[in-house]
Image 1 (cartoon, one colour):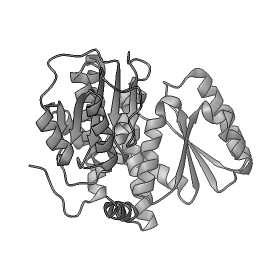
Image 2: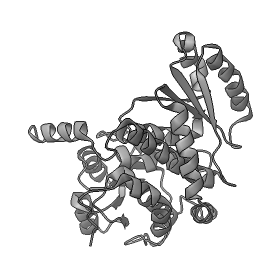
Image 3: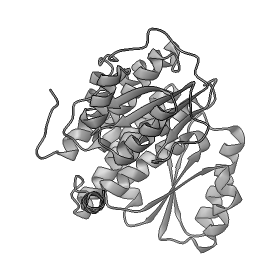
Image 4: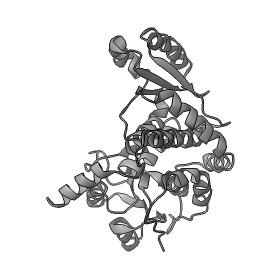
Length: 334
C-alpha cells in the first residue's frame, strides 16, 4: 500500500534522502524484461521532480550509451521516437497531464513501454499493459522522492542493459558512501554564501541536469529564481551579459575531476570576469571517488541549500500554491 503523509516535513524528507536511496536499491523491477533489447533510441518522459531523474541519467550516459538517450519534459513526443524505441514514463502521481499525453503518442507509434510511478493512471496502464515498472510509495512531494525515482529509473535501465552492471555497482557503492552530515553542513554553507544574491549556476555540460535539479529545488523549496547555464556554451553568449553583472550577483561553479580540461581552464578565466564585475564566486566540489558518487552527493548538498534558504526566508518549502492554482485552472478547461 502506498504511504500517505498528510503534512510532509521537507526537513525530514531531505534528512532521510540517504536512507531513501538505500531503500530504493532494494525495490525490484516489476515484470522485468526477459533480456536486454537492442533499441534504436530511448526517451524518458517526465515533468518537474518526476522528470529530472531522466535528464540527469541522460547526462550520465551521454558518453557511453550506444543509442540516443533523451529526457522529454513535454506533452509532445519527438518525431524520431517510434517503433524500435523504448519510452519510459516517469510520473510520481501517475497522473501528470503532459507525460500521459506523450505516452499516448508513444503507444500509438508502437514503442516499447515502461514506467516509474507510485500508481494513478500510469500505474493502471502499466499493469494492464504488462510493462516493466518500478513502483514507489506515494503521498509526498515528487521532488522529495528523487532517490526513489532516479534509482528506480537506473534499476529499470539496468534491467534493459542500458545501465551496465559496472555502472550499477558504482551506483550502489555511491549510495553506501553518502555522508549526510557532510552534505547538510556544506549545503548550509552554500546557502549562506548565496543568500540575498542573484544566483547563477554553472558547470560543465554533463552536469546540466544536476544544475537543473538545484534550480528546481530553489524554485519550489526556497521560492527563488535562479539561472542555469553550462560551459563551454555560456562562453559564447551569456558571458557577454556579465557586462551588467555586479555585486548583487553570485556565480556558483560546480567543478569535478570529470570536467573537460579546456572547460576547467575556461572556468578559471571566466571566474576572473565575474569577480571583476563585483560578483562573488563560489566553487562547489562534490565529494566522491566516482562520477556517480559525486552526482548523488551534489544532489543532496543542493537539497540542503534550498531548505536552509527556505527556512531563513520564512517560506514553507512544501507549499507550491502557484502550481496548484495552475493545475486547478487547467482542470476547468479539460
